[in-house]
Image 1 (cartoon, one colour):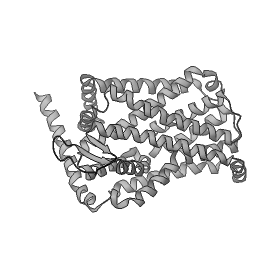
Image 2: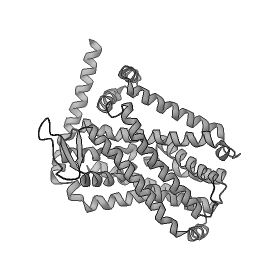
Image 3: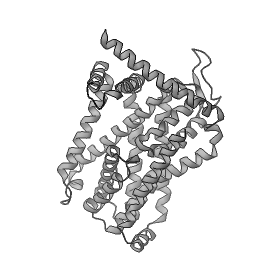
Image 4: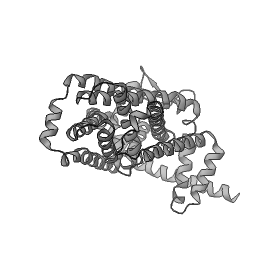
Length: 375
């Protein structure tokens, strides 16, 4: 438990450092002057768009809970399954509190602290972590699909708005988009067909540096197979598209507030820049993509949109607040307000036992794989 909290705190600290590192390259007075000119009335729709993002992403979580046979209910209690025909239930209020309180966990290195979400759900509903942890993977997969679709659509429909900047290596940008798209298509294809997935997992087992993760990957795939079926991906991708599109509109409003003229070209640029920064942050080795996101946004605002240095700094700062820090602050506040509900004594009592069960499950999975190969 403390390990996950420390990892989250470390990720937050690194992300803060990356966000405010822009101050070292920009005159503070110029930055403050730029922020002072921001049209404050735009904050209301910007925050409203973020609320829409959260609601849509929560609906993804709500959808996935149904798949693992945990039924959110408006009335009733959060309780474990009472029989084979009476599945576990979780009050929508509890489910939403849990999801919102987990927002800061995404900043932990490798997003590993998000496992706490599955652990808390297990304590509430007795749902095995082997069934709930894959939801975290499924949520990230939906995020990736949505961003790739949005970025690819903008690049295809309005290429002149994106690839006209001479200071950018547009071939590199296209290569990244094509590579990520191919990776996502391959991942989705493998998820649909078990023989392909098992073939790839077995191939991983023959790579010296990756072989030790083979059992964990197989367990993750077996547990997430139902979640990643095409019919579920199609439904939840609609939520993902809506969530990321609302963020893109918010970024566009931020640019308007910083003095840019409204236009379809600016909206396309804002959408592409935000989406591409998410892609770069996803493949970054830093916690929460810190550094890669800020640098990508700064470089593209300067080269593609043509913003001044102080306006770029204000834009990076404001989109960081809108896209990351608002959720972190709200998540921490909700976690503190409902601490007893999320972290009751029974949770701490079960943490050690859960760790042992997870280790045993992984060992069992590995032994089963070895036996199947011998057969």
